Length: 95
Image 1: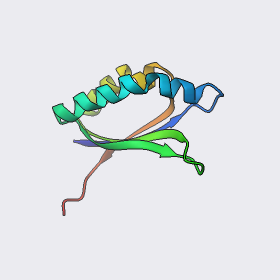
Image 2: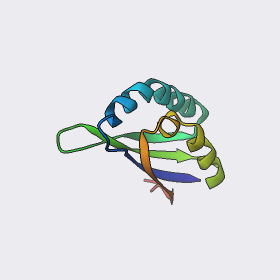
Image 3: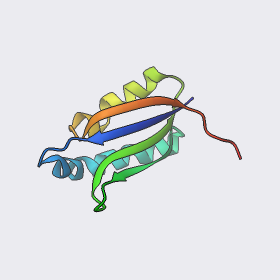
């Protein structure tokens, strides 16, 4: 099943530095997920000036519990980059 994740970053003055600190580990995890077939699409959400302020991730997992298990260990969660995370079941259009 596909899940859409919208994650908004913390807004404190150190938020961007935490994002950049944890970004390499987060990207490595996403690369593994791509190989495993659980990462479908994603990227950074930007503010009007082009600064990273959150993320959109589309994943494919058997259940919501599996999504939650991944989120619990993702560096953007454990490193306090993402403050508000919304997870929704998602149906992709087949064209």
